[in-house]
Image (tube, rainbow, N blue to C red; front, side):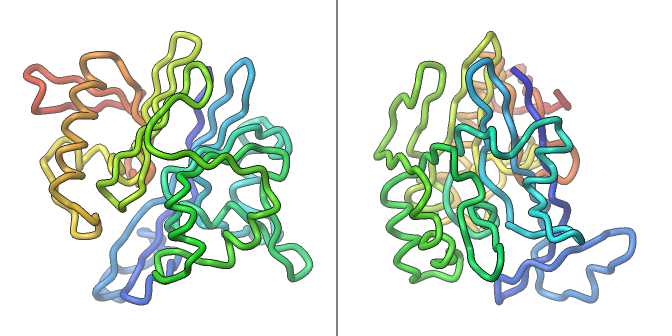
Length: 256
């Protein structure tokens, strides 16, 4: 198994939930009062049988009008058309924007050959368009893709489990991938940064902050005890890490 972080850079997000690129070497946080600053890391996993994307980033393009996600996959040595699975933790815009790409003024699926795995009720929430965290037009354009709607928790294929967790948003899911002797945990926005695992942290942007914190503790304990490599979608330092703990409550995270 090969694992790649497909970093899309840092952004500020204000009350309007607009994502604006932020370069800490050139930009000042003081110029963006009231903003949350995040980093965005979709992931790519290559196994003997599949090329897997885990969450799809913002869907922004580079200066050549190329989807950043597609170019990052090429930079990793693969062709975006060869992606076979797209695993979605949830559908908030910063995770689902790259599900589609604009070509000739029209949105179309970014990975038309891939099977997309989405919690059914999360999809229904996004398609309803009742929250600004979801961009309805993305899901309308994605309906031409192959989508496997799942409910609750279960096994997708041998070696890949999905678990309805519901801490960050009601139908958030995490993925446990145990293939070819490597164990990988993708916790989406319930395990977004190593720092939130190292210190007990209740985030205001989680639907149920206390539950999300408790889930992080559970994930950290399992990762330390069973050797799961963790993928941190919003990490500003390192996106792929290993967890250790002496007591099951306090954690150390090091780059994998």
